[in-house]
Structure formats: C-alpha cells, structure tokens
Length: 297
Image (cartoon, rainbow, N blue to C red; front, side):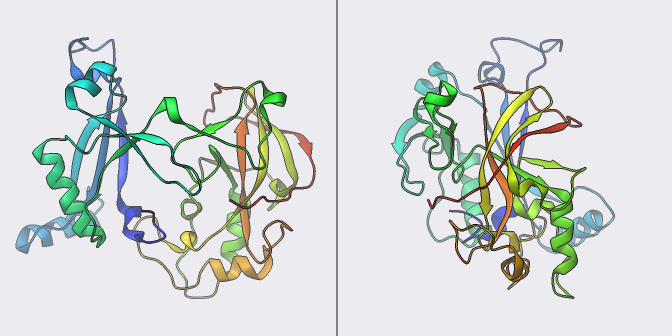
C-alpha cells in the first residue's frame, strides 16, 4: 500500500532513537541497545468529546498534536529475530519479489491495537502488517544505473520504487509552484518526497546532470524522476488535490523521450561506492553532464 491509494499515509511519521554510550543508563543488556536503537511509528488522532476539542486547540496554538505510537526494534539481532519469531516472507514490489522480515506477526497486544486503529484511520479494509527490509535480500538496481563492471558492485534498494537516492532542486519546485492554478494549496518540496533537497542552482539545472560530488563523495545521476499523481498529496494533512501540481507539471515538464506524456521533476541517483556520507550544508560539484533517457519499470 502507498499514498497513491491511501493518501492519509502521509500523516504516518517515523523517528529513530539511537543509543548513547555516554549515557549512565547505557547497558548492553538493554534490548533496545541490542537492536541498535528503536524505530518509532506514529500518526495523529482525535480524542472524543472535550479532550478532542482541547487537543485540536492545543495543536492550533503550536503544541504537539495528539498521536498514537508504537516502538519497534530498529535492527533486530539474530537472537531477537529468533526470540520474537520474526519470519522471512516474500513481498511483491513492482516486478521484484524480495524476502522481507515480517515483524508484525508476533508483536505485542499494544502494537496489534496500533495496527488495527491505523487501519481504521487510513480507511483500509485489509489487515495491516509490518515488514522490514532484509539486508540479505536487498533488490539490485539496474535500468539506468551503472553496472557492477563500472562500479565494482551493483547498487541496491530496499522498499523504494527504484533507486536509493532522490535529489530535488528547490528552485525547480518554486518555479512549478509559481505556475500552479490559483487557489491550489501552496506547493511544498516535501510533496515530491526527496532524500536530498538542494539550493544554489537555476531551476531545472539538474536535468542534464550525469555525475556529481556531494561533500567528499561521488554519485551517479541515473535518470529523471517520472512523476505520478502522488505529489498532489499534502504531506501534512494527507489530503490529495484533484489536479495540482500534476496538471501544471504535465503542461511543460514532459521532457524525457523514455517517458512520453509523463512529467519529470527531480533526479534519481546511486552512490559511486557502497558507503557515503551526506551532511546539511555540503557543497554540490557537477562533474559531468549529458542526456538522459528514462527506462520504464
């Protein structure tokens, strides 16, 4: 399931809590430390009656919106997988069928209640489950990505559509936002769900990038990001606009011969080496430019 079918998924937020070895409470016997940290999943909800009214008022004044949450092991150890009975099961992601770790089959009663309430919140009729990417069964990225012969390894992705990194030019988003129909909600870069947002370049300068350096690491810019209707979803409210920004994008951003009639915004990337590091404020250096032709999923 994705926001394409259930736009209220935009309201589901995640946090990662990492252990601090300097903390006086740090103990290697703590299950949360054995799993390398905790994944927190939460979504907003309204209480009934007076408490619900006060919660909405508090949120409008800038306070935290009431929410339901659940905590799960970030990276369960082999012993924790055995202890909790987590199982490897086959998933379907486009044309791939990776084995993934089902961590929802044996979670506690509070977590099961969380999933049942989330199911009702999203308007989903089928029961929900929680799966985690298995590092042993990551999906190799081909299509427009460089090959093992060039890199010495084949780039991989987990549950993402196709590529591990999505970069977006804020100037390009603002230019699109200036063109959308009057009365449409203000366009946010978050609606395009990038990993990396950058500034300092002219709108659409990224369309021709082939290879760049971010900070001290090199990345291959594999292809343009072909847009579906999902950017119409407001990532705060979870509400989908009927036409924008998709209609505006299609009016002038159908620029890739490999994706005829489909709008493009943003670029898909893979790292040149297996492990890289990106920090806020890193400088982007363009190393190579050229033409792109999208390859369909």
